[in-house]
Length: 151
Image (cartoon, rainbow, N blue to C red):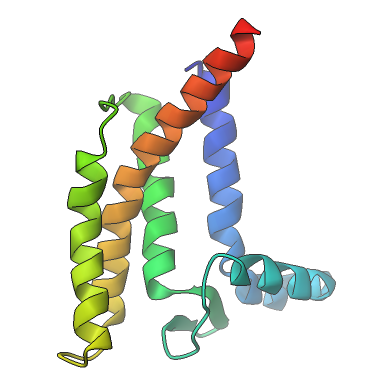
């Protein structure tokens, strides 16, 4: 994919990921207060936003849970890597399955109360999944652009 599309994808992921810390932006830019309900509701569509699982910062809480934060950081970090090195994947979902297994195991073990929820583990398993997910997102967008250009 040409560099312009990589830049657009990176900027969109950067905006989405930075929006997770909307409450921290309110300290510096008070006029953003009017957009807070929209941001909160937008992130509530993709995350349960359980107060016990969100990241607490000195300036406020994140708008997503730890696992979702890891997923979005994984997506963003892999988009940065993709500027310098284009990673190709095959069409099967073996890599996605390998990346999602630790996340599923963590969810099952915490739900069954075998061990307590750990934000660090949730971020790590989410990051692993998000990193791999980027490859399939990128390939899917690339195929969509190619198909659209043919028409």
